Image 1 (cartoon, rainbow, N blue to C red):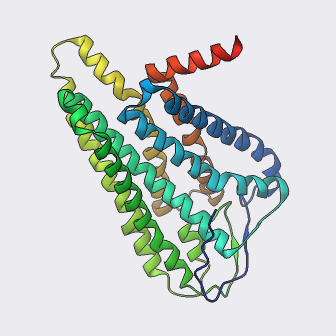
Image 2 (cartoon, one colour; image 1 turned 135 degrees about the vertical axis):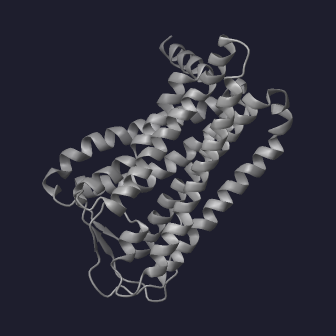
Length: 314
């Protein structure tokens, strides 16, 4: 992993506390956390393998799904290994370049996840509202443009955060009451004005994710309108079935994110320990459940998984 080292006055290492107030339970908390992380790794790797080797899954929807799986692997791996090393090995130190690198990949993966869900909503909109033009609209060239566009957008949104942190002087404590580095948590350790960090943190990533949510809501409003105007009950059920897994993943991604943002802004009575626990679960639970949801609700993937494991048994 490439380390960011952009500061001429590089501060010393930071100390990641872990989960404040639960230091005595770190060993036990690490066990379910590790299990969930391993489920995320195995599940997403199986999903990527099936999409890669099965020609019947070489469709736009599954291409976006494979991109979601890779981003989920990045999100969970950017935070989980360091968290487990804190829980089990007491390895709390992290260098400033290492902190910036971890922060970049965590925030980048989160914003990119949101963009991929928006692209998948567009895919479902075209498939249901304009099925006859699906193959001519979502051509390989168009898909590549979408992937490059959302990846570059996410990169451009998160990269300034790195430079905003490197300009700050850190002359007070370097103890971070968290298990991983995140933008505002690190900025609050600086002995300088961080107003620009706070404003950019809101106007950049948060407004981008909110715009994705609005576009997804518009897409599914149009999808529902089209579905309920289909002539037969069977056609309506089939159309809704193709969207079921995607809607579950969208809800699982955005509801905790919105809850966390509101809790940070208005939930002053919510304990800091709960915030940290919730933040840790957020980087491993959605990545672990996404392949399970798609495997259970998508017929093509469910059939391929069944064939894969039945072949291994024989």
